[in-house]
Length: 199
Image 1 (cartoon, rainbow, N blue to C red):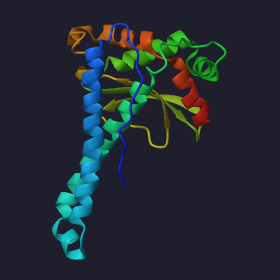
Image 2: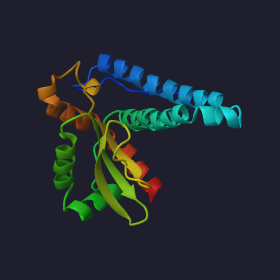
Image 3: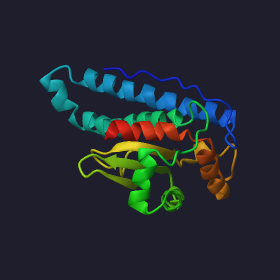
């Protein structure tokens, strides 16, 4: 198995510089390469039953690391896709907006809560999910790239809150401005499409 690095068509953004996007894409590239390299290394250590026994600890640690690299790759794919096609505001008729209103009372109420999650101290991701089993929307703070993902739920919206997402444009004390810039550039139709596919 080999993962292929995706390319994204992202026009100039407001408040998030082209330099930030370029450097951020290099990190995404690194996650993809590392995920592939780890799988390759694991296969190389599993050449015989004797080798597997001898390398059990190393294989286990590589497998643990794989979840970090894989989720780093996948989270960034969700993130960058949300800028493709340029900024597009929500439609009040959208099924996702209606579900948000039903869940949190209003879109503004949801947005306030989501931004609150994004301001969590530390590095990680603010994520909106859809749980097909219960038909509900849920939030989570994902620590680093992989700790806190909601099992079995589909990612609807993903906001990267690692410093590398905004440090070239905003100092850490201004990360709230980055969150505002993210939503100003968001193509909401991408989240809508994810929601319809997840249902």
